[in-house]
Image (cartoon, rainbow, N blue to C red):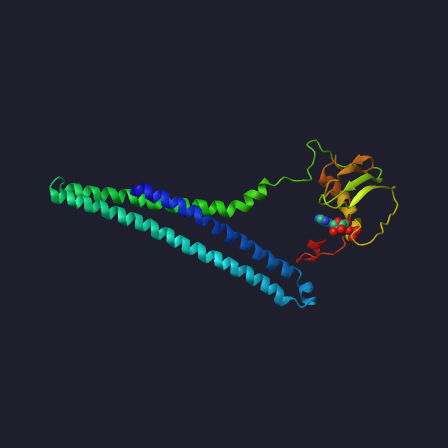
Length: 266
Ligand SMILES: Nc1ncnc2c1ncn2[C@@H]1O[C@H](COP(=O)(O)OP(=O)(O)O)[C@@H](O)[C@H]1O
Ligand SMILES: [Mg+2]
């Protein structure tokens, strides 16, 4: 019954305290993203003198992380204490029984030593198993996010037999395309136009009208919901994304510099 109690206690408490570990991981990645965001966009933060605000967001998240970390540590001590207590009480009871047996004369001193040694042989590996089980659960909790990420389905996928885009006559055609980022708001509704080879076309419209979206669709960051986009008679959803993007040059809206040499940036 000691062994059964030990195992039940270990399983129950380890599972119960796992959510502190999940909480810790979640707060840690939240804090990291606040820190990285704040530092990447430091100019924006400074324009609006929001250093304190950013700092507070970061600090609050760290506070929550700290809370979860302390709870995790306390519950681990509780687990270790409980495991120790179960073993100590179990061994003590058995030794008392054995000693009683020796006093009553139905056990020899040798039997007493046997019981004691057997207990030690049994509980040392058992304790070890408890530690390994805990480490396993911890590792699984830490990998949880990554495993979920691996399960994510890609929305824009190359067809199995996708060919490379072969541009001879660079006519870009948007044929009656419709697109939305989320079902509740249509961004593009039946848009058609053609850019003949060697021509310039400007798309003019209010902010949020979907101009940049046209470029994103041309690059196939998203697939259109209906209609088709083609370059030189080839539907871009039929060709490989790498070949498509290799063939298009872009001057981005925001000029981003990598924190590296000019050569690397080029
Ligand atoms: N990743 C996105 N998820 C959801 N909505 C988006 C996303 N990107 C843009 N939008 C929305 O789509 C609309 C068109 O955006 P965009 O093409 O960037 O406009 P603009 O014409 O100013 O370049 C905007 O209303 C914008 O809020
Ligand atoms: Mg835009």
